[in-house]
Image 1 (spheres, rainbow, N blue to C red):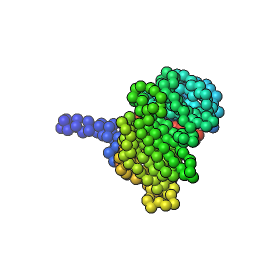
Image 2 (tube, one colour):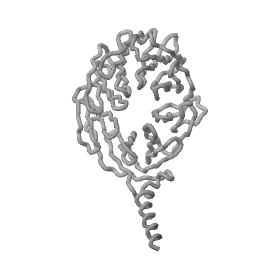
Image 3 (cartoon, one colour):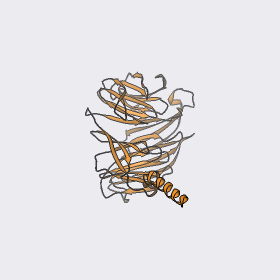
Length: 372
C-alpha cells in the first residue's frame, strides 16, 4: 500500500510540474502568453532587432542595446537622415542611405565606421562581420567588400548601361562567395541578371572572379541571399529561383509566383512565403496564404486562414504566423502551439522556448508562456 501511495504521489508531481505545463507540446494546443513588460517606442522611426536575449533599437539618433528588463547595456549616438539597419549573427550595420556613412557593431558595441566616396544605396552584413556596401555614382555603381577590421578587401565598379542597376547583394558566411542581382533596361525590355562570385580566400578583382550568371527576361529583381554556404535564393517579381552555388552555380528549381509576395522568411530547412493578392493570370490558389517550401522547391504545406495574416517570423528551427487573433508556432508541417492575442503585432522573436518578444508599430512586449 505504501508503494502504491508513493507511486501515485510521484505520478501526480510529474503530471503537475512536467506534463501539464507542457501539454500543448503533445497536441499543438493553446498556450497563454503573459506580458512581462511593455515598451513604447520613443521615436517615430525605429528599426528593431533581437539577437539572443538582447533588443537592439535603431533610430536617426543612434543605436541602443537593451536587456529584457529594459536596462541599457550600451548605446552609440549618431545622426543619420535615413538609417537602414541590417544584422547577421552577432553583427549589426547601420547605413545612412543616399549618404556616405556606415557604422558597424557587434554584441559588445561599436567596432568601426566606414566612409564611402559615393552615396550608399544598399548594405549587407554576413555572420562573420564582413560588410558589403553598394554605392551609386554618376554613370556607374561600386561594390566594396570589407573585412571584420573595416578594411576593403575587394572593390568593383560597373556601368549601368553594361551591367544594369544593382538591386541586392549578399555574401556567404564562409567569406568566399558573393551573389548580386542587377536590373537592366534596354531595347524596350526588362532583364534581371544574377551574378555569382567566388574569391577562394584570395581577394582579387571581383570582375575576375565571376563564376557564373543567369539572365531572366521581363521580370524585376527583388532580393537575393545565401541560405548556407552553397544554397542561394533569388526572388523576382515573377519567380523564386533556388541555386546550388557550392562550385559552379546551377539552378535547381524555379517556383512560379501566382500571387504577390508580401514577405519571406527562412529557417535552416524551409522557405516561408507570405502571399498577398493573386495575379490576374493566376490559376493557383496561393493568394492570401503562407506557403512553406523545401530547398528543392517542393511545397511542404500551405496555410490559409479565415482572417487576415498580419506577419511572419522565423528562426533556425521554427516559424511563426501572426493573424488578427493568434500567433501560431510551426515546425515544418506541425503546429507546436497557438496563442490568442488579438493584437497589432507583426514580428515575433523567440528568446527561448518560454520567452518571446512581440513587435508592433508602437513598441514591443516581453511575453512568457504560463500555465492557464
